[in-house]
Length: 250
Image (cartoon, rainbow, N blue to C red):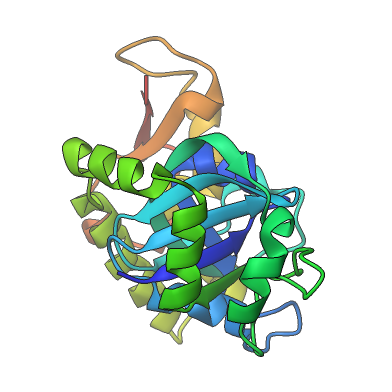
C-alpha cells in the first residue's frame, strides 16, 4: 500500500462526488509533467490524502489503476482539452479535517527535497499528485487519528472495484489514440462518443428527448448509449445521433 497526496483546490467537489482522480497526460505545452506521470503509478487500494483549501478533508482509496479518459464534462471551466488519465477512487469524508500547517514542526523533517506536498512553512504547493514516503504517509495517517483505518474498513465492507465497462472503455480509448488515419480532433470526438460525452451525446439529444424507460429529460442524468454496438459501427455510426438511445442513471 502506497500513500499519495492530491491537490484538489479546483476539482475537489467534482472528483469526490464522481469518485475519481483526473489529470491531463501532458502540460499545456505538450510536455511531460511528473505530477501527471504519477497517475500511472497509483495501484489498487493505495491511500490518497485529498488536500484543498489548506486542509485534508477526505481520504481516498484507489479502486484500480489509471486509464485513458477524456476531460470530464464538469471540468469545462479548466484550460485542458485533451485525453488524460483517470483513476477510480472511493472517497471518505473525514469527521474532522486535518490542517497540516498546524503540525508542520513535526512534519517538516519528513518532507522530501523533491516533489514535496508542502513548503517548509506548511503551506501547500501548486501541483496535482505526488507520492509520499511510507514514513510521511504513516505520520499523516497517525495524525488523522484512526480515520484511515475506518475508511479501509468501510472500503472492505463495500467491496467496490473498477467495473468491466471501464476496462472496456480503456481498451477502446487506447485503440483510438493509436490510430494514424485520423487527426487529433477526430480522435477526441470518438473518445467522447465512447465515453458518452461530446458531439455524439449532442447529436443524440437532437433525436431523443429523454430516457425511453424512465422519462427523465435532464441531460446530466442521461447516458448516450449506442444501438448498433460500438465494435460493429464505423466512424460515422459512432457519432450518428440516430444510432443511439438516452438512458437514465437514476
